[in-house]
Length: 486
Image 1: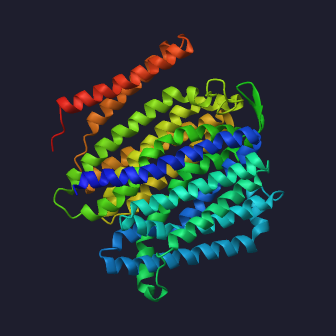
Image 2 (image 1 turned 60 degrees about the horizontal axis):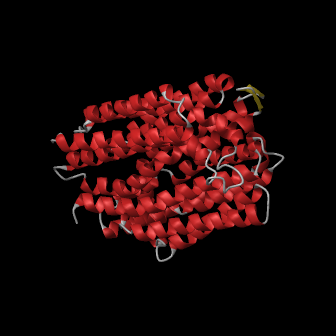
Image 3 (image 1 turned 90 degrees about the vertical axis):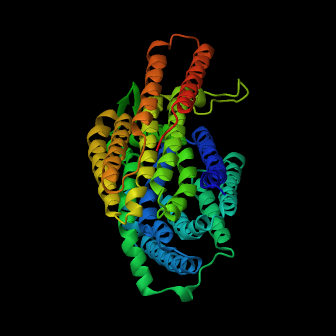
């Protein structure tokens, strides 16, 4: 099968599970914000943000290491076994330490009065990290359909349990974490079915090789987790209770508003996640071909266009999304009006996630050239920007400080990764053309938002839709008139 058709077909399968997962995950947000207080949703956002750090440390970059060293079917089985049991050992150690030292852990996180939240999340982390390698192996073997089936089962089980616990039984926030724990356990069990590695294949030298490669991937991932989630962990701890836009908010309430609107910004990851699941294994397999740089450049070009479309669509229709009430059929809007003040952060969150997607795709150069330390340098620099900007701005600007910080961080990382990549592993990206498309879309956005808000709501929505279609048509026509030349 043609490489591009194969990539497209697998992206469609991965994308289906990813899109459905993101939509349902986002659909849970209206469920939570309409059943729990703003402060309780702030707790939810805080704890899920904090889980990113142990997830990165425990998996230790071994998913990428597995793709890197699985050169043949026989070798893949050996690498898989060593990577899996390494992660399992790290996960068990983390769980044991968390249980043994739970009192200081709870005090550190500020949940001494609600220990059950943290203990349940320890279980979720254990299940999720242990499932990482079995799922990675399915991707390596191009078993996209099975991977998607497992993902969809996990998604729908999570949804069903949330509806049962929250909507039907009217239980408290604790049962949201219980639902996640149960669904994660089921996903692990199914991912290991006919996919369990042989312990006899474990070798100390293989583990050392994998961990040596994965170390910088892990450090880069840890820095990435800081960039992606630290804001929601810092807001409740840095924002002193006070007035914001005329509303008195404590730190958890501020975090709840930001977390709910952050979900809108995360729609851009629909494209990125589906693309990465299919593209990352393909990049490694095609790396030694003479035309590999051209293949990478073409794939990146169309990814970047799709991501730009997502940014403009969600930026322009954020209000229509949160205020949707099924034309009066719903008792409340999709997101209660208490959260709408946070819509001002959505364009910056979208921009940040766009830059993140660009960076993740550009970063293939240092993985293929065995210079993974650059991943740590870039992500570490971004983490420093994130930490400094958040600490400085959150006490004064609240969630807007966090939104500014994350967009600046990822913008810097994307630009720096491109510059370094062209030096060490040149790929003929058509950056100027993509920048031109982005600038054109940004100008349209500014014109509509700045000058045309006096139109009535239906007319305004129609105009925004027209602007998006016009922008897409201009890109399509230009791509046809001036096709890319390599």
